[in-house]
Image (spheres, rainbow over the protein chains, first blue to last red):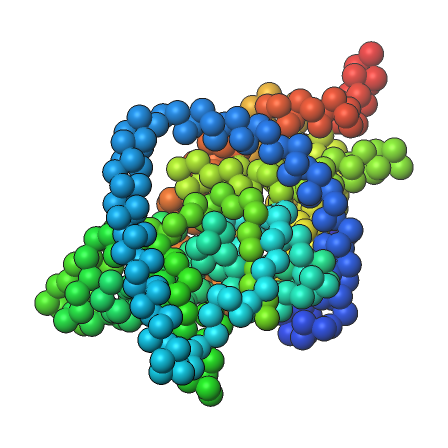
Length: 268
Length: 172
């Protein structure tokens, strides 16, 4: 019996691996996931107050230092916001004057807010399951955001659920640029679940604190999956050596990718 | 037998739901507890190799379904793990108080190695250092913390192993 079960597992794995997303095993899995979703949502809701309580106590540690840091950041952000308002108005005026045709932006997408219902073993893949699927308009490769920042892309869709591969997964890669100087590179997973901005030439000016956002592309043949300008994170360190062809840039995501509760999927 | 099967099915289902929606989000120093594996160890030790393998297969299939992973991947690993722990429980580990702790520690290591090998064979980009160094030690500690409460709970629900009762009868 054990041999039969092991062989059955191997057969399932083999067939699942080879068949298309519309194959019978994928269909059975979609149906099973739909059945299990209410239980997962229920369990998550029951656990939510306990997780919030833990988060509250966890937040108390170092709250004073964080408060001071955030006050300083707020003061800087207020000054920046005033400057940005003027720049945005100037930008609108100039675009109108030039009849400028831009790439699709965030405003061209509809937002589907949904809950995270499951997560795969994080040591093997950084993927989460969300409780909305193709019936909500979600499509393959749709960008997924949390608190306004990019967290990943949809890599599998069922009618009521979808699988999201996070930026920290080994298979993820997103073209991105630093907003301050426009240094273009690729955001990929680094060691220990961190993020790196790779392929940035050494002559580019990148410093700690630079904001990194999705680059998008204007090439019609190879359209980007993500619209330009979705924030990803900030540069935490940037260095270079004589032997490496590119800069070594570490970035920190703007959200905690290991603890996502609610995400937003952009659909067109 | 049927009541036992229903109880084991319910335990496996609850463990899978909790693992996929809550437990897998708990990450301590890179490690994540594996409630399904610990529950499987308890079932296999209390009911033997056949039950262990069957429960492992069902748990793996449910877990792959719930997390939209490749079907068959986890069930293959858990079938083997359930059978191996069941055999240990029927033979060397019979009635030994340290059997659950030892089984969980060993099977956590073997499961990690097996899962890593399977992912590599399937062509997944997996960081062996993270799996075998970064996540393994915290994972073992977290699983061991779960062992006593989970084993006690499962034993309370499905009862002591059948061979224990038989031995008592023979001696009496």
